[in-house]
Image 1 (cartoon, rainbow, N blue to C red):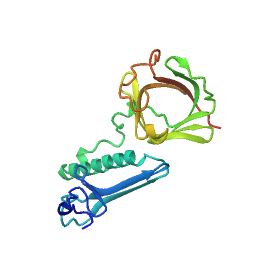
Image 2: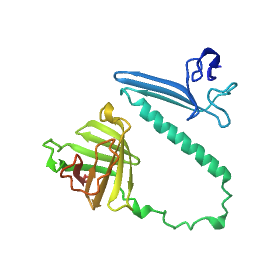
Image 3: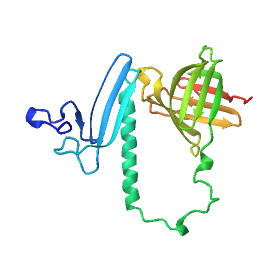
Image 4: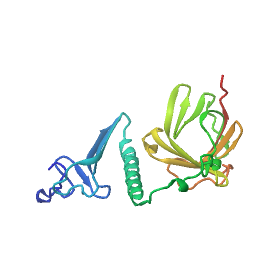
Length: 239
């Protein structure tokens, strides 16, 4: 009853208290206030439709409670993408023929594409920053970029400025990097991606990125006449 649409009550897209999204096959609701943001998504089991009569319940449930205003929609969108990917993977696995011992790669076979995925894990200290070919004039002596698995964090001293997820393509020329903001950076950048290029040489790293939300990727490291940001880093030395 709660998850079924109520066309007889002129509510074809609502159950009792839950909004129905047929595209993602979810029932839920979201809301917020300055400084807080929340969302509930209940993903219907395969073969059921959100809003259909007699729905038995949810296969997955995602609850987002945030003390950042406006962040829940971006996180919800990402969760829906992940659930869709999991479901596609399950369908592919069901359709995939069984793998025999002879099909498996040798134990010492290198992971495909590993040589094209440079490791940025660790802490990087900013040594220069330019926007549009000009020094920013900011004190970046305490700026640190931390890569830890799939997550990145930007800090000024001990204060976190923003964090999110990242991915690179080392096979591109120049290599590319995408930084998706999930926390901090202001509400206007929540869920947006900064696309860029990077160059890694030993313990030195530099990258050039467009502003978050701009889809055109810089073609190189010359920022004159653009709003692109060029940052150079050195890897923090371990004690």
